[in-house]
Length: 451
Image (tube, rainbow, N blue to C red):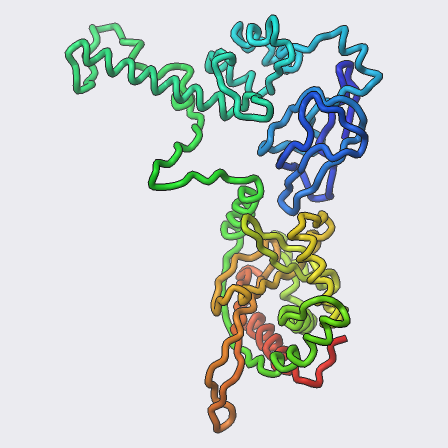
């Protein structure tokens, strides 16, 4: 997490979990120049599973931030430099410059870069990516407006500057052609054996080098919403799921009238005893866990040349917010009572909304259940929580007339929707599973046990 250097201690991305290879800086909680005590919260790290607040491993002054907010860094990669008290004397003898902070291949980023940290600006430091772009596109960084923390220049700022410069140069060429009597902007033929260098793409143009440019801002008819690191991670995971997993889908209807009566019987007493609202979802989780024990193939993952059937039943539950969805895990769900599932579910929801979930809360899930009916939906086609084999949703409970024996009665019914990995699961296996979940839900009555 930290290594000693003459000018300070380099802080790196910690190894947070076995499967974690990188993290994104969500937000810096300390700024350059601030004094940081050991274990003070330094920054927020965003992974494909959860956000964590990273404590400082050392005490001292935060002298430089090497990775900007929203940028990704591999585990073990440097993200900032903290000068510890005993390193201050050494640092005073070696004033830092922008070139000193750059790798050897980027130290010659051009005279404009060196001049930017000359007299009166020695404390300005640029990331290696900024120095590289400045050198490649011949950009004077003193002309670039920084949008990063404390006005720091980011690589996006440099690319935006280059694009604006390209537009200005293009407009200048257009006006020049008009003055020369070519208002249509048509290319004038060049003399044989010569070429008009002004009409060629500038070497410093990102378009000429094949680099992508920031997306244009929308006009008054729309609003440009920046993509957060969490949303980018969700997008990548969903794309991976639909790209690698051949999805199939099925639905079954369950008569949950007995479940409705059972919950009505227990909810007030459960609130007085546990202080937790008793919803329908814990009953569904219990029914699903019991069905997986009967059809263990639902608890599996695809692994190229084999299918791995998981022994333990760890149910992932989807919890949504305004900007993201997380899937914390209830471990050994088949061993817990409805009351136990209700209490653990409430705890996970509370910590999720407060941003207090840990990586261990989100690891190890084998099957996902989503309570989409809480939003009033009656039918959904969910994307599987990669790399699991299936995901089931519990839809809204509705009252409607159904045929019971030889009579028509008003009953409480709900749809159960299943997305399945067709490499692993087929209709017969999933049909058996869904029938078992249906039987489990329909077996609830007012005499069923809660604990």
